[in-house]
Length: 218
Image: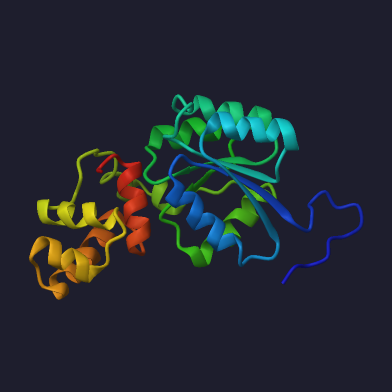
């Protein structure tokens, strides 16, 4: 439910969000999610240049989220461009597995923080509202010293068979079709899909594909 804003408030009733990512699957996921959120107006862009152009044409947004690894980003430098183009309004990073160094860099740049592509959809709207309202959000997993010890590897944690299943998931195949292609029982495929999601920190098969692509596993 949308709450009426006090007279003279700088926070608009509708939160305008610009999301830039070079994976169509990611943009489709966000568009579908926010289509059911009445207080959001979402615009998408396939790369940094397109996002900067949209801001040139439409002015600053309440929140801009840019993918760390898309074309034109040049590491965190692209985020700096987005922050400047958004005229200092909330601007954050969209990624799957940022290093501690990346987190430190973007916070020093004045970023609004990080939204993980593996974020639970039930929390996503509140995380984005918090950032759009001026808060700085970093998931606890990214700043917990114990959890950071296991991060930073670029090698896929998946087994060879799980990689086979993942490859077919990227084609949009269902469990039955994967089972036929790999000569496996459908129950075995279901087990592999569950293991893939667990190892990649994804809540569903779509997020698993997004994370795997973001980490260059596929």
